[in-house]
Amino acid sequence: MSAPPPRVRFAPSPSGYLHIGGARTALFNWLWARKLGGQFVLRVEDTDQDRSSLESVQAILDAMRWLGLDWDEGPEVGGPHAPYFQSDRKAIYRSHVEQLIAAGKAYRCSCTKEELDLQREALKAQDPKAQFRYPGTCRGREVDPSAPHVVRFIVPEEGSTAWDDRVFGRIETPNKEQQDFVIMRRDGLPLYNFAAVVDDHLMQISLVVRGRDHIGNTPHQVMLYDAFGWEPPEFAHLPMMLSPKGEKLSKRHGDIAVQDYRARGYSPMGVLNYLARFGWSFGDQEIFSREELTFAFDFSRVNRSDGKFDDKKFADVNFAQLMSPKLTPDADYIAQVKPVLEAEGLTATDAQIGAALPLIRERARDFKDAAKHLDFYFREPPIMDEKAASKFLVPQAAEHLSALRALYAGFTPWEAEALEARLKAWLEETGHSMKEVAQPLRVALTGRTASPGLFEVMVVLGEQRSLARLDAAIRRAQVT
RNA sequence: GGCCCCAUCGUCUAGCGGUUAGGACACUGGCCUCUCACGCCGGUAACACGAGUUCGAAUCUCGUUGGGGUCACCA
Image (tube, rainbow, N blue to C red; front, side, top):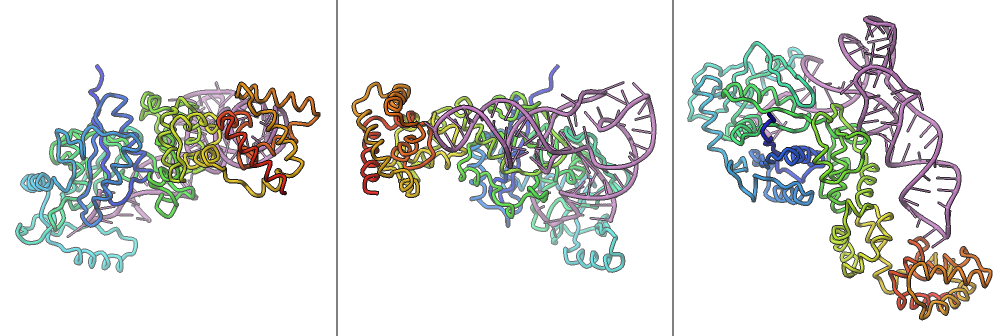
């Protein structure tokens, strides 16, 4: 008898862009749902109105879509447990708070933040090492429901709270470490721990997958499930992604938004592949297709130790994705590089890009880079590297290039092997070496000193443009 | 500081009592070669430390050290 398909969720708070660490959490959730045929729910945790914005919601949804992490229920797609914005679920939270109060598991508290701050400072003055916890002043006291107040949950004095984490195993913390935490604010909005529990239960989430920074919240949430008489979901906490220096990853460490990598010209699978292998492994395999990832992923192979972000490795994984026609089919490659080309003022048909693609796949590390490698195929005349020109397009080269020009005019078939054979024969006849002519020819054809093989380039360029570029180079070489 | 978690090359990791401790990135020597790139061959480089358990520990236990997370009317 197999377990029912999981219901998992990703619950971002829309206070910025989709963070790379958040994307990994989303990915692990998504993989699990897709692997087992479950549902992936997207829920927007926007109960903090000051920090949430609509633009941010949009940015996150865009990033999710770009990564191909589609959700079965959530914003813009709806679902049986709508609404999926917590700001639209206030009435639900309110009634559940009332339920806990009525059951004697929570109480209204009229202590103000200022009062508590004062108490906190007083305690600190008395004993700098002491831990301040809410003393339960309002516990059992009658507080006028119409007067300003928060609602606090009653934490059991004794015992401990535990769960069996899918990744970390059993985690247990003594209840005396906790205080009567606030579940509803003065303004009537719920707090994270409370809203998450109510929603996860109502949305029938069976497994909560999130960052390890939530481990401290989990006991609160488990207590809440108990208080409601609900069965808690399973939990799987993920090790943290830290900065290269081992600090918590933040904007200070450069690019950390999914958007940043999109702008850099990374492919979605490049990003996903790197994230997947961060904290998870599958033998020695480094590069995965989306399907392979979905097949191979399992929480039993998720690590417990935090990791440091490595840009170089990330770039290499992205490169490996782009290099493989199997992982990045021509059509995908073309669709993604085309806009970058256009931004550079270059226009090319899919077929034209496709013809040059085999020559750049093993050279371009990202789509930005690809556009650079593609530039001379589509720019007429090509941009001439002046240093290269003055070094290689000299009178001596003009002679060689003129000879080659004559050799290739009207030559058939215009194919790499034939073109190369013709040149080799000429070298044989004249006693020149490939090294003498290669670089002048390359500079003539491409405007630069580094390029794919000469004959492959000539084929992509075609006879007319190849000869025209030779002519221009010969003129240039003569006047030098 | 309390609580919780973690600990294999610089980095991501394999390893789940017996291995010359493997792979990948990065770095590096060479090969290939018309340049660049890809590719191939090779090199430097790790079990944090200390006690146990065991015939035998990177693998199990405890301690030490180190690192991280969390302690809100944020999520």
